[in-house]
Image (cartoon, rainbow, N blue to C red):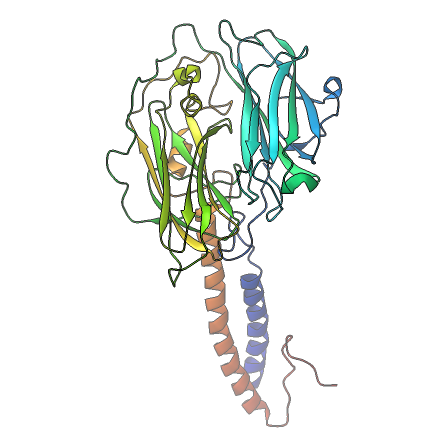
Amino acid sequence: MRRVGAATVKVLRGVLLAVVSGALLVPAPAAAVSPSGPAAAYRTAPDAKPVHGAAASAEGPRLRPGTYTDTVSAGERKFYRVVLDDVSNAYVSAVLAPPPGSPVGATDGVRITLESADGEKCSVSNDVTFGSSTARPVADYATRRIGRGRECQEAGDYVYSVEWIGSGAGSGARDWPLELKYMTEPGVGAGTETPGPSSWATRPAEPVTGTAKGVDGGSGFNDAPAVGHGVWKDRLSPGESRFYKVPVEWGQQVFLEAEFAGTATGRAASVPDGLRLTLFNTGRGFVKNAAAGYRGSSSKVSLGTAPAAFANRTSPRDDTGAMRFSGWYYVRVSLDQRVDTALPLTLRVGVEGDRVEGPAYRGDAVAAGFGLTDADRAAAQDGRVASGGGTRNSVLYRAVGYTGIGLGTALVLILAAWTLLARRSRGRHVRQPPLPWEPRAH
């Protein structure tokens, strides 16, 4: 009996250490951010390649379709080169993602340009600015669109540049992260473009209701969880932006509403434009933005879009022209850094309209990043990140952690009982060896 008790104590002691260590060392889920902690830094794509833009256009590194990382400092303009064919639409985007909490001015940001080797602009240069004193990931693109009478129709070398603009609080910016993306959309057969609708609803047919599902918003485009039609809940800290992605088919439009709860007292410093809701398209182009002030009470901000249609790209309205793809659309929800407390968020996502036939692409548009798969549609039902992380993995990690802690607690009780029995059986003057976490007497 004496040997059985001592041996059992030793075995249980080892098992307990393994279980407790495992429970404590369960890694935090990749996409999770502490609800009351600081804003997370922007997470770049795992396959992004480092690149160094040149100070002269002729010396810019040549980029193939894909994702790249670089940096930009105040006063810099960086050049890259891309090779375009004469049948595909091209999109070159930039995400400017300063470290959270960096001082920025409302007009600080970058200008994105795509032009021919002799300086002909392929589209209007897009200025990307913060619009407030809160640093957040901002993005947009420049384009080359195939079309009769348009610029940059020939195959050849083109210049893609990202230039610092602004002279506000961010004028001291140095080596702020940039994520660059070059995408090519296959050409389409002549006469196969579906005409866009001439009118559409500006409000959802009925309010989006239902039980809210928990979701951990991402730090940017790469770790944004998929959210479909329904109600979702999250939590933002002051100065934080969280991203989500919504699957949109041809013919569908998006209605978004972000509602923030009030403070416990209902009183807070007034923050104009303290709440921001922004939508980006599949190519990371800016679609639409809405903002509202925050004064401590419940507040919400909403926006709606035109139906997605290939023909929208000819629209004179920027927000309609940006709804030119089927595929993922990205939602950014931001809380100004001057708001003095973390706030619960309720995000209502309405995706309305029947799916219609899209254009007859002369290539695999989905493989090029334009379109949706059945797996994408399924991921949007429960807030998953297809490449890892997100709500499903967060739940798994929490379950593993709680199970380990519960099992560890049970083993502690068993160990205590066996230790007591063993000590009694071996006599009062026999000392048990100390547990590994107990201090040894000297």
